[in-house]
Image 1 (tube, rainbow, N blue to C red):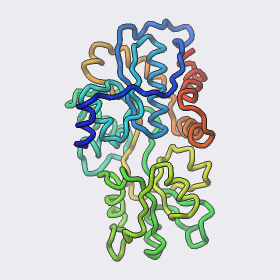
Image 2 (tube, helix red, strand yellow):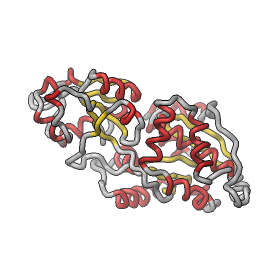
Image 3 (cartoon, rainbow, N blue to C red):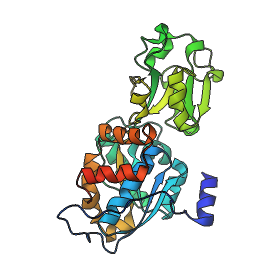
Image 4 (tube, helix red, strand yellow):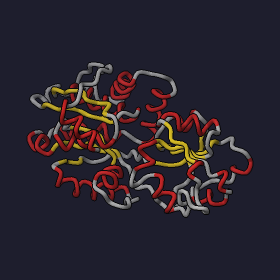
Length: 315
């Protein structure tokens, strides 16, 4: 966090160099609804966030705003600092991430509407406005390969992992999840599998890898259980099965636009422009878009534009 803050303070955010298609306004809608609005759109670095960031850049520009593309910020902490400092004034964020990781609450709220309202009200003190969320709930989960050995076939929930001997309680996680308040160690503790304890998960059974590697490592059997995002297209393409979070450890992670309050107070017309896009972002829609990028290898800007155009949000 400190390093992120120093970096941002020292040199600001660089503009994203990745491709962003040019689009017109929605059919039969004037293209100047956001004329005079200056926005800097940020996002985190993983696929879904970069997709969402490009969607924001495209649709806001299509409606007349002047938009700087600062998508692809490395890590949640740096992305949050960029918003708090005002280097970014429009970003898509997840309710559970803000509630636990940013606002310091020990546990999340599984009810999606209550989680959104709690974050919206609490983050108002940070001069951030949370607009209504999407149906998408991109929460954390653990997955197992569907073609796992016979002794693993009956593992349907995270609680079921306790049925296995310690040697088979092997995990692949990415580094940020390993250190989050809503991450790996608190999750293990909730499920009675404390890290390093005789009755829990041996530390040697945990492999920390890059986010994308978790999926392939789990599919290949490097570990039995891999940390995944529930809307990641690689779950289907790599034949993985998501385990039930039967103790409801992970909070709701609904996606919502977050806008700097000063900017939003000047330009409340941002809300009706972005609202239809949010309403269309379901788990199924974003999972398919993620798959096009991560599995088919399509360009992120093109995938974002094609989806927006197919839904009539741009022309």
